[in-house]
Amino acid sequence: MSLIISVFCNEGIVLAGESRTTQTISTRSRERSFPFSDNARKLFAAPNGFGISSCGVASINGQPIAGYVERFIASYDYSTNHTVRDFANSLIEFFSIPGYKGLLFFHIAGYDRDPQGIPSTERLFKIVLETGELKMCTEISSPNQSGAIWDGVTEILSRLIKESILPKKTFEAENLEFFDTKSSSIITIPDAFIIPKKGSTVFSEATISWGLFSLQDAIDFARFGIQTTIDAQRFLSTEKTVGGPIEVLVIRPNGNEWISRKTLK
Image (cartoon, rainbow, N blue to C red; front, side, top):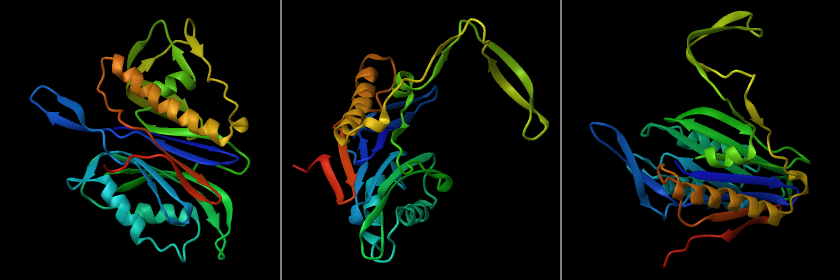
């Protein structure tokens, strides 16, 4: 697993990702993951100003994801499909194939264009595929809204930004039951933790003025999120799954632009 971040603001959309691939080795006692390469490609620029970022499983049928994404970009018919949703739906169909286990995340960004090719509306979609089956396809951005999403190894950044609860005590429970008002039925959870409200410390979600973000602010936040995760993993006793060069792709009405990109030497 790795990390991708997308930030959308009034000026455009920023896609960012790092470059690490990890390999998992299974032994009799446990599975162990270690860095295999810091040269993986997780960001892709496409014609019509579209952009793709991906994370999750590193390969399908023993081949890196990057090659599959490049073949999809090369085979897509840009002359008749002008919307980002068309592009996203075609990618879902392309990757709905057997041959891998686990999760694949995609962020798809771009601007819808009219039949004359003139850009109109900003779009950002999140796609989740599990073992070739679609689990989610949802539009993240909306007109006059700004914000950010991240997928993959999200724990470190989410701890900094999202609301969290620090309980003094937790209690394990078996066959926890509660009444669900929507279905008017009792729901049973076989194994659960009960976090008592009394005595817990709640850290509210950080206040970020997304609506005031310039495009440079969006780029800086995306880099901050990935670099902070890399730096934290360096000191934590955890698998080093995020690392390598950080790539940044900007999507604007006039097309896409690489801000930072690995090149072959």
